[in-house]
Length: 166
Image 1 (cartoon, rainbow, N blue to C red):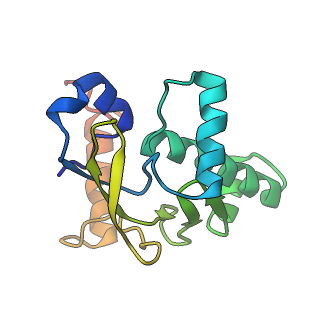
Image 2 (cartoon, rainbow, N blue to C red):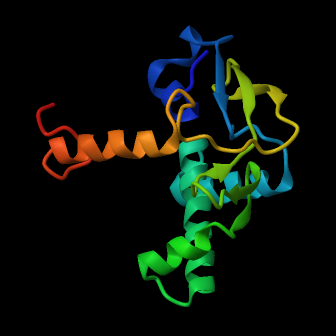
Image 3 (tube, rainbow, N blue to C red):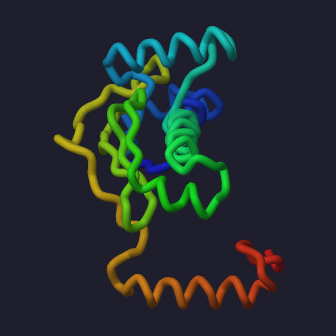
């Protein structure tokens, strides 16, 4: 089971070695819906008929729309104003409707389990019945504890969100 191999990576790694393996994502190019068919068609018209979409591409796509809606509602692209309005946004994405969680600003999304097919796509074997609430902070610490931990990393890394020593 992979949580990071998508259609694009399958093209590079060689599909034949991975047929039958599983992946968990919110979006697969093989999602059967009119909205997804239109999304895939527009993507291929712009980037080439052999190109594939995947979960990160689809997330980037709907993320721009969620941001634009928040800017419109805020009346300004000012980040603080957008942050105040982003939690009220939803969008009918190729994967289905996504919602921004008011508390943590992550998206509620449908979960899917897929199995690699010989054509480099995924057979969707299971889909959650509804969008799942995002939990960006693992439960073994409370949110304030995570914030303290992350702030400590940020400070120890000289005000950067990546360790400059690696």
